[in-house]
Length: 143
Image (cartoon, rainbow, N blue to C red):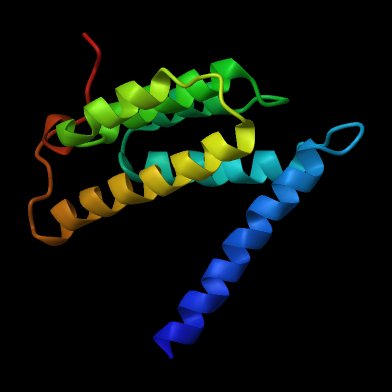
């Protein structure tokens, strides 16, 4: 049963990215699927700090755009760096050097990495290591 569910999930993800590719490369380009994907990313990032509407608003402002840009890629990496464990810092620093990157390639990799970071934070919470403050989930302020 799990195998069937995994197969269905895989096919749904493929369709997600196929629709994005079709829309972005259409003439004129469409961005409806991009907005859905960015909305999902926004939701996942906000779930990492559920009681911080001030951070939710900042994430929203950085992610909601009318079309894909190089700035979006930098903003996305900025946010994931705030939440990821320090062991991922060299990975994202190297990734940042590849910007600008094809939008679809970037978003696929970003989504996979965000999923890893999200799972790490959920594991912290599940093991009764609920953070007393945001620093325990590696939220980096950049200051």
